[in-house]
Image (tube, rainbow, N blue to C red; front, side, top):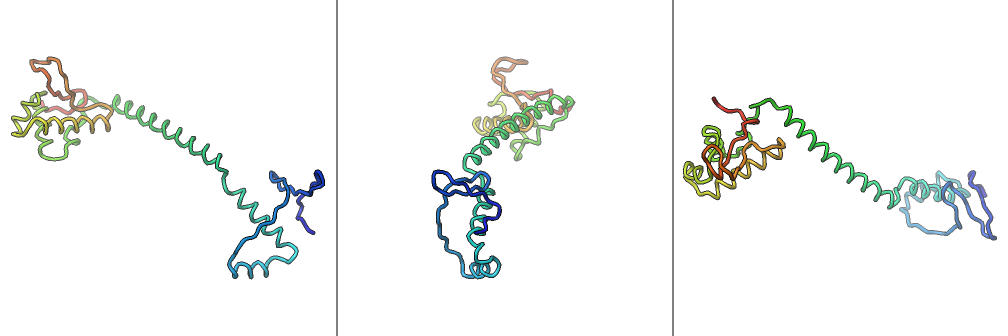
Length: 190
């Protein structure tokens, strides 16, 4: 029989065949294939070489299919790369924050609607305000104002690495527990 250069090894009375990393006893398998594929194989592959042909096709497919432990290893490496990518992204945003010129960020970019724009206008004009002052100015409740301010703060911190408005609980220029514009980042009208 023609084994196409494959080695036949006799160990302990059992004939085994070696295909690179595959050494072992031969096993018989059966497979159901479409009739058209079978007829094509009959035409293309000579009668004595069909077993070798099927065996080589299976081995070739196995070599191309990654092993489960290899997939797990690749998945772990990919997760590690995503963590490192997130860290690099954080450092880049910090660097970007340091390279901003004073007064280059427009706080209105973080506003969604007219209410947000009015909040930011009031804060930039008066440089700071308490939540009740803002609620009175906008004729709405304090919780609405507080939620809007927190959303603007969170969005700017996420995009810039530092928020354009900050809450300071202590006293600052005569106001306690007030929201302040971060003058290092924000364009202010003078």
